Image (cartoon, rainbow, N blue to C red):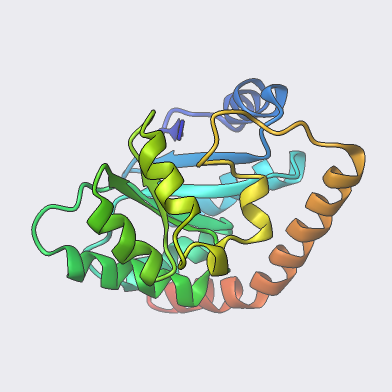
Length: 208
């Protein structure tokens, strides 16, 4: 999954151009964004809102698994539609998975992803917890294992058509599908609006 890396020096103009050049012109319907640590929460929220203003796409945050699960509430306040946790699972994998599982309580099912490398055991644990595994590239055997797994079907949502992380080829979207996409995004944005506002208000009141 290719990420758009956003630094302190990135301007809104360059970010919008990158989204357009790297994703929209390739008929992609999602953007994977990664923020450098020196960008504030409010700046991240403004950037996400700017992308939404110009494009009807899913916006997925690429980030490490946080030390504290409260950080996942901050991710929600940015206004992103989902999260991709890209860490290598070294050490206490069960504790790391517990933190990721918390994100499923906040974000729509089928929009929480995690890097599983080439570990079939880790893939099974993720699917059991309703996390979408992202495997090492070109591992078609493991991709087929995911698609045919009994726990994959329940979490294979309508969103994955637009975020084809398990496919090599990008879908050709018709006008009808683009209209459906816009309606799904509007529904997600409206559903999350109050929740995002509550999280943002709690950060503001705490001075963060």
